[in-house]
Length: 376
Ligand SMILES: [Zn+2]
Ligand SMILES: [Zn+2]
Image (cartoon, rainbow, N blue to C red; front, top):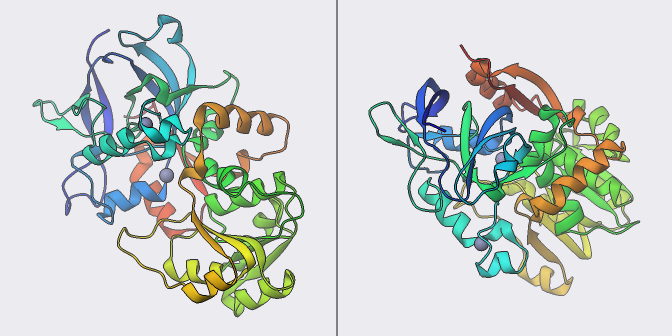
């Protein structure tokens, strides 16, 4: 084991961060209970772009990227050597194992993860990435995958089977699991319950797939882009509402006889959250998945929420417990019950990362995956 020099796409100080700078960064050996992972594939998520554009604050410089599949290259003290060579999917909810939320099985809410993520460091408040002059380079949410190698807590690298295609597997790290988990875990949909999903990007389409797995019916997809209809139906939607053609709430209420049992907001826009609530039936549940800016507010009527016994609940990363849910999702995919492959719109080489980010920002693609390891 030794410190390595690698290529990384670094997000620099605000104002200079409009594009990522691909340059050499040094990566340390894995410390105690950590593993160093050679990245094979990484997805680009809207959250990465929020950090790049300064919509969300983060210590800089930072290596972004949090949807990744790779191979364990070396292990720190305390981690069995047998883990070297494992194919893994990385997770930003590795579980500290001792905070009250982790004890309750809700590692997406882990207090230690939140603390390390805010600091842009590992658990011990220091980084494993350095500029050539020794300046620390920050981590993103204990993952950082826009680079050739990364270091993560041992339980942030979840083993998967060797033959799972990495471009599909990496999506479990965020987008696909956020959607599937919202349906299976957060909402825990039951057969015959009606569902409306607002937003048919990668997350929304994954909610639709999750709803189909639960035998929800009907499954109504709502999007302002009519060209999303074919895709939404392919993933399991029974109906499609073109929100650009009129009031989607009225159509959803009509199709469900007064509102859907569960509505899902998967766009991150506050006004869509309000629409989703209005399309929910009495005693129904509105599930908020999308993430607008931190201080954004939406308007909901307390009188009617009380009167109708509605629930408006949040779903963070689909309430996913990676060690349980990753193998489950891959088992479903292997048996044709879950389509991860079709979520991948394009697979490009890592050196095209800025071009890929620009394409993701247009909203025209579900997920772009970058193959890492062949950078110039
Ligand atoms: Zn993400
Ligand atoms: Zn914890």
